[in-house]
Structure formats: structure tokens, C-alpha cells
Image (cartoon, rainbow, N blue to C red; front, side, top):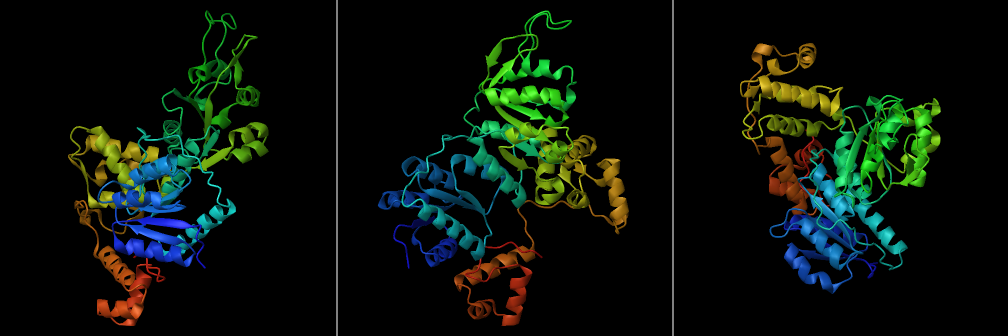
Amino acid sequence: MTDRNLHALVIDDEAAITLLVGTILREDGWQVAEAGSAEQAFGILPDQPWDVVFCDVHLGGADGFSVLRRFKKESPATKVVLMTGHGSASGAMDATSFGAYDYLLKPFGADELQSLSEALREQLQSQQSRRLRAPYGTGGLKSDVEVLGRSEVFINVMKQVGRVAATNLPVLLTGESGTGKEVIASALHSHSSRRDLPFVAVNCGAISAELIESELFGHSKGSFTGADRDRKGLWEEADKGTIFLDEITETTPAFQVKLLRALQQSEIRRVGSNQTLKVDVRVIAASNSNVEEEVAAGRFREDLFYRLNAVAITLPPLRERREDILLLAKSFSERVYSLNPQVKFSLDVLELLESYPWPGNIRELENAVVRATAVCDGIIRIKDLPERIQEYRAKTSTESPELAETVMIPENWTTLAVVEGHYVAKVLVHTRGNKQAAARVLEVDRKTLDRMIKRHNIPTRHSANFPSPTA
């Protein structure tokens, strides 16, 4: 039975999407209204105390972010789910930092929608009609930090970054070396209320144990040989802003005691001084080590670990986000000749970049692409890449190097398999999952249709929104 206290609005300019989302929500007990544009949605905004809005990011007029901002301003209790077929890491971070409940990637299936619907319904019912969700204070915030990626694993990380950014909690970033922890720390700062105040990055591993206390907390005149004046430390430089402590596990237990006090008391003491200073900083720490193993080994204080670990975010290695490799490579190449980015990649280089394991992660990719861009003749070929990558290809390739084609991939082209998968999915949406009717439209038999569905991984319950083929 429909619960009349649960109202959902679905906004999309494609009727197939509103049909799919609306059908799933109605089956799960929602009252559903539909709109084909942001303007139409704004017109019915006052009609109901909307509990949830599902909105496409790319609409014909105002976009999904305009819808999100409008609902957060006029109906802050409404949970907004943004839907997009062109997902990006920066989009996910912006969406969640603006206050979106979720950032849903197309193609999505009925099962994913059903799970999201159930989670939303349970949360709303548990609130017993108390609409307590406060608006985020990030208004029209846009980040100047470049965060590139469209892989699902990285987008999920950036959704977490967007949600955490608006808080004042310490964050611990972990992951292999070269995965971009400082970029993520900067993104956390630029999406926070401290964004107009200092962001200070400190590589703890690059400062000797004897100097790190002075570097971070400063020193008083005469506190040691050469201290000819009072000196403000980096912690004070970051006052009211954010300090990023990279390679935090490289610090000594003796210094960790003083760091813990600074975190707990929001105060520091310069080397050689008896006076304490109140300093308000948000701390983001990072390590490419397993911090729990460092604690177990006695090299890192357990109490400091728990203080820093209020929120833990693990960055995936590049080999787990291969969909992002070519996007990142193109960006790195364009930076070399930012005024005239005409360098192209040969087909065999593109294939090699996607298959290479990248043990040095993004840092290694950037180094390889920048070097190749600088030495190539306008087209990056295998010979322009670092020797270690050429050697990897020689060990793994079954194709003679002489046979490798130098072919450019036109932008915005897609494969026949993708077209077929999208078309079959559209037909299934049109027939509301009726395979017999879909087979007639496609002029194939049922067995052939079943093979297509399996080959392109198309969910059959109410179909899916243009699912990308997996083969």
C-alpha cells in the first residue's frame, strides 16, 4: 500500500528514464510525480513536501545542479539524487558537497534503484516526519582543484570526499604512493568552509626528526644555535585553515605526543617557549603505509591514530581505475603545451597505457606522458615512452612492433557493440521488460535476444537505462 507521507519527484527529459525510475519507486510505496525539465519541476515544487527528488544532471534548460541548489534553499529536508550518464569525479565531489544525497551513475539497473529506494524510505520513516536535514553551507561553491576521473571506484571515493569536506573532522588518507593524496587533501579544503583561508602542505618524511617540531610549531629566539629570532611554524601559518601532513607515519613517537596534544587542545608551544598559543586548524593526514600495522609494530601511537582516523579515505591505485588512464594522460599532455594542445596518441600507445600496471600510479603516468609529449614529433609513439614501459610491452606483446598501426581514434566515436547494447536496452524499456515484444521489434528470435541481453549485461526487470555493453 502506498504511504501518502512519501512523495518523490523524478526529473528527466528522457521519458524512458522517468518511466523506469517512477515504476520502481511506485512499486516500493512512493507517490511519484514526473517532470521533463527543471522549469517544470520548479513549478510544482510548492505542491508537496517532497521527500526525494531524482534529477538528471544534463537537462535541456537549467541543469541538475540548479535543481539541487533550488531544493536545498527552499526545501532543505528534501533528499536529492542526481543522475548522470557522464559521471566524473569532480561532479561527484561537487554533488555531495552541495548536499546531494547520492550521485547515481547511468547505466543503472532496477536492482540498484530498488536498494536506493528502500534505504531512502527507511531513513524517512525512521524520522517520523521530522524533517531535520539542514542545508549544507557550501552554496554555489566550485572547486579550482582539478580532479579527473570517471571510473566508478574513483567516483565513489569523490562522493565521500564531498560529504566529508563540509565537516571539520580530521581525515586520514591512505593508499599507495602516487595515488594523488595531496590533490584530494586540497579538494577537501577547497570544498570546505575554510576554503578562503590557508592550505599548508607538509611532507613529514622530508623533514629530519630534529627539525620537524621547529618546522611545524615554530621556535623562540635563542632556543637553539642559529635561532636568532622568534619564528612562526607551519601550524600557525595554517591558522583558521587546513594543514596537510603527508607521510605522517614517518614521524617519531616523541613528536607524535606533541602532535596529539596540538590536536586535542587546539594549542601549540613553540620550541624553547613556555607560552601556549591557540591555533585553529583542520588536519588532513596521509600515509602510503598500513597505519594499523605501524601501530601494531609500535612505530605509531595508537591514540594519535584514532584521533586522525575520524574519517578514513583509501585512494585506489591507478590499475583499479583503468577507465581514467587515457583521460589523465590527455590532461597531462595538454599541460605541456597548454596554448596549443595538438599532440596525439597512436593506437598502440593508447592500448599500452591502458594495459601497463603503473606501479608508480598517477605520478608515474604523469612523468611518462610529459616526457613523451616533450620528445615526440606531434604523435606519441611507443619509442617516445620511458624504457621500462617499452620493455613491459616487449615482454607481454604477441604482435610484431612493425605491425602496430599508428591510428588516431576520432573523438566521440563509439563501437558497434555499444550501439547495439544501447538500442536493445531502449527497446526493452519501451516494452517494459517484455522479451517477446522486444524480440518482435528487433526482428530476432527469443534465443538471440537472450544472448544479446547476456552479452551486454542488461538487467531485464523493467530494463535499464542504456546500459553500456560489457563485451
